[in-house]
Image 1: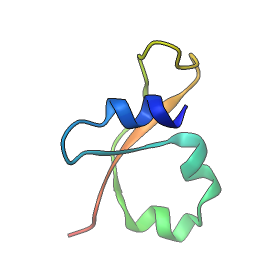
Image 2: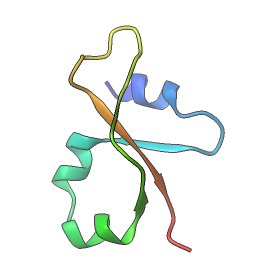
Image 3: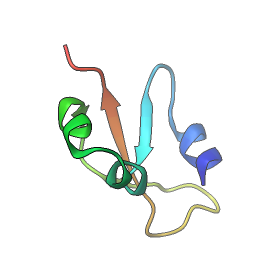
Image 4: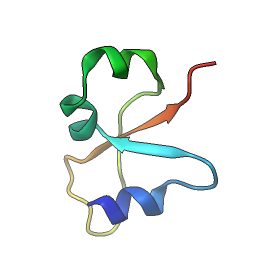
Length: 58
C-alpha cells in the first residue's frame, strides 16, 4: 500500500493514509493542515484505502 500512496503524491505533495493518521497522536494530527480523505484510485489499491493531503502549518 505504501508504494501506491507514494506514487500518487506528485511533486512536493505529501499524502498519508487515513489508517496512518488514526494511529498518530490526535493533538499532532490536529496541528497539521489536512485535506479531505479521498479514495485512492490506483491499480492494486484496496477499495477502502483513503488518502489525505498534508501540509505544514504556516
